[in-house]
Image (cartoon, rainbow, N blue to C red):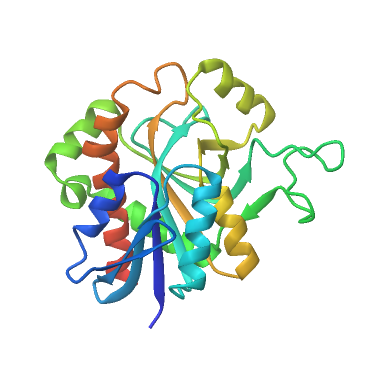
Amino acid sequence: MPRIGIISALHEELAAVLQRLPDEQRESVAGRDFWCGHWHGHALVAVLARVGKVAAATTATVLIERFGVDRIVFTGVAGGLAAGVRVGDIVLARELLQHDMDASPLFPRHEVPLYGRARFAADAALSDALAHAAQTVLAQPEAAWGTAVARELALLHTARLHQGLVVTGDRFVATALESAALRRELPDALAVEMEGAAVAQVCHDYGIPFAAVRTISDRADDSAHLDFSRFVRQVASPVSAAVLEAYFQKL
């Protein structure tokens, strides 16, 4: 049976996943708790990666080496960069890049040394399945994540799915100047976060399919810190769990 690794960076997001596992068993490795269980009969291992690229890479490696997962999905929140990407939207990564990687002049800016590339592609089939799940959820928001969350999102706008480049770096982008600089440097970037590209690189090394789906929690600008925790807890976590629920139902 395929075994899927589910990684989140925040406690609230992992809790939303664990609530849906009827038989989870905890195993501690490398200072992390890995929860083995089943979702709609499908075997998975869920884990809190902690924040940042190194922590995420360590987590992905343990999932592959110790738990034998054959695919990994990262679910969490991100800051919106592109003009049309708004709070409450869902972003599915088709490519991932480390925006703070710079080994110039030895290598071009953003290129990972000795890989000959800056961008790591997400797995097409896994991403397609998650895109379908996200569209299903967005088409029936109240059925997917409940009236309260749907009402809160409706106060913002009608949530949309975006697919494309997501960029990763070891800093929380929280000023308009920083986000504007990222848009100039990487004009096709949809969103910014702190783990995805590192996991994508590990999965590339092992030949493991990887996908990342993120809910936009802020616009990565001067308002990024406002009510962040409340939004993650009350909106982003239910949205992420609903997308995974739809994915596992169709798997």
